[in-house]
Picture 1 (cartoon, one colour):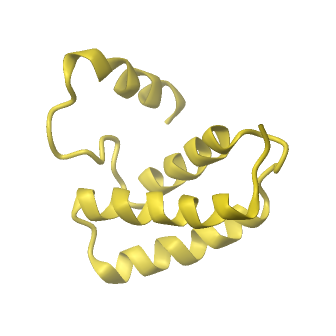
Picture 2 (spheres, rainbow, N blue to C red; picture 1 turned 45 degrees about the horizontal axis):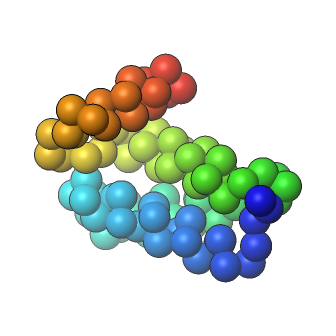
Length: 89
């Protein structure tokens, strides 16, 4: 599967949701989203939306200085996600 125009909106929406959950202030959210727009321009459109989304969200986590942006405990069945994230951070 490749990326389409509709994917761009979703990337920005995911980033905004992530920062909202993490409690990031609005001024920082704007700065990160504007920087993310530059990152989106360089994405490989032949990759899947999930691959590109993961890359962008990792950039968001770095930009907001968070290694675990989710403020609530991760359910046992999803702890592998945090392990996977830490390997790539």
